[in-house]
Length: 245
Image (cartoon, rainbow, N blue to C red; front, top):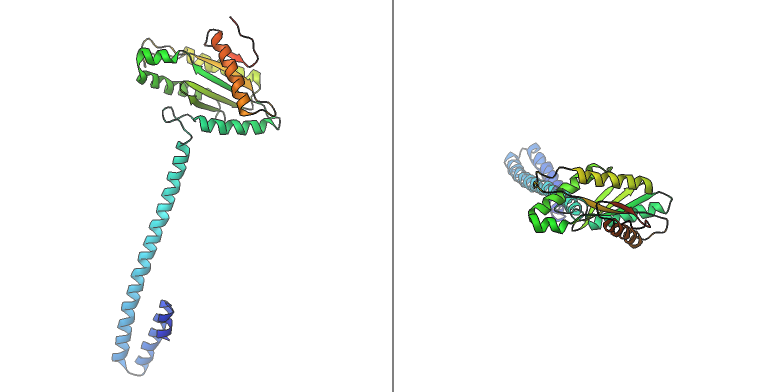
């Protein structure tokens, strides 16, 4: 039986068979033989224990590595959707959010989108340097994020341009939000970054309609942003609103 179990790699059954053998020899008074079988069995069980223990330790190590890999994967996935400078969602994240809002718009859920551009930002970089420019971008995101709801989205769309997505907001409500954001930037004290610094932004606003495509939304917001700049900047304009001198 011991030989058969060993050939089948049934180590525990082979050990049990050896124990039966040792007990039988002891009952027959063959204590020396029983001792030899029991000693071999003890060594065999110790070896099995070490192997299983090592396998268990290896299994726990693998489980820990898998868990750590999953955490890193989640962190990398999150980082892939964040702007590394400001920490705001990036363009890819914004487009995904916009797609979701457009799906909801098809069910009659009102939402709005706005492109906003920091006014004369190139002049900030040229006059004060890119370190100051980066600090302005970071601060602007902090100011704007404080003024919107958790389920809204402010994403860095590129350079000094941002996309604001307001879930559940009608156009009049979205305009009030944009005016509040515009005023927050305009009235903020920027002197800790540079004594002569003042930062404003222009906003181009549009609503999300049933059947809209992302391209149409962005084009409408961009046209409204152009109107805000043409009106002297530091302004909010809606899609379809005539330009003002």
